[in-house]
Length: 367
Ligand SMILES: Cc1cc2nc3c(=O)[nH]c(=O)nc-3n(C[C@H](O)[C@H](O)[C@H](O)COP(=O)(O)OP(=O)(O)OC[C@H]3O[C@@H](n4cnc5c(N)ncnc54)[C@H](O)[C@@H]3O)c2cc1C
Image (cartoon, rainbow, N blue to C red; front, side, top):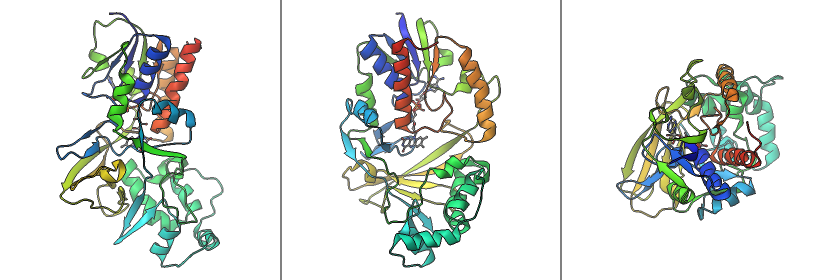
């Protein structure tokens, strides 16, 4: 069978394009994935205790983009969920991102007004005129004490390098709040799919013009004719690492199930200090599932393993640019998604990127 498109990767990037090409342009599509399941890193499933867990870290959908929310709403109903995080400092569990409560708990203050918190932060902040990295970003925004207590250890464990070696954007994603709002995200839409992400993907890929082949790595695929290729795997792998390997951070997940309804006050506890692991996630807070048992995943950052996080450093950006230049030379091959564009993208951004690529393809506005 001749396919119009071969799509490598059944995550958000590949599945959105498969759905659009089949349903809007009548194209015949084959989606392959080297893993034994669809949904990419958003994959979730019930474990042996009947608790729905996310297999590659907690996936919290949040966006301000109405059109992305509406697009995905064709394939799922939603469960409203606002993420909350506490950081363990000594015996305290303090809200993260930093807010008024965090400061009162850590420094024994009793601030009740935003102006008091602002004045406190003004004293803490360091004057850094040209912010070059994540350490400087936090010092300029929150000062040394909060940096040491909450950011430095967490970020160093997570990325394997000190924040001073990372772009300002890495720690710059988190706000510092003057009020007591303890939600992790500010976005208009904060939801997760009611029946889980995998069910959303099943509906998205359920089209007579879409075939899905799992446990199939692109490099060992033979004898399948296709006109065009959409590649959502690691871009350095596509080019046989000709310029060297792009660095990625990975994670090991340790799962534990307890015979209690809940063991954490919120879904996520960060461990900025004193432990090898960075955070623990209790899934039932996220899914809203009812059960007398509860499952927690603890995350240990790794250098090797599944490529989860592109490392946002200047060197890796240069290396990516070499691969991007190779990609630009190709006709009939499109690179999209988190790994193929080597960018730290959330799910909504990946959906937006793939919808934008689809619009270009539909207009014939591609190489
Ligand atoms: C721990 C963690 C937590 C996250 N939490 C959030 C969150 O809370 N909110 C949020 O918005 N985003 C979150 N993300 C980001 C989210 O996972 C991504 O935005 C999204 O999954 C990217 O989709 P994708 O299709 O680009 O990549 P992926 O989901 O990684 O899919 C790529 C697929 O391609 C397959 N593949 C790769 N190479 C090949 C090959 N050579 N042959 C065949 N198949 C191949 C892979 O097996 C994979 O299934 C998180 C990511 C991680 C790692």
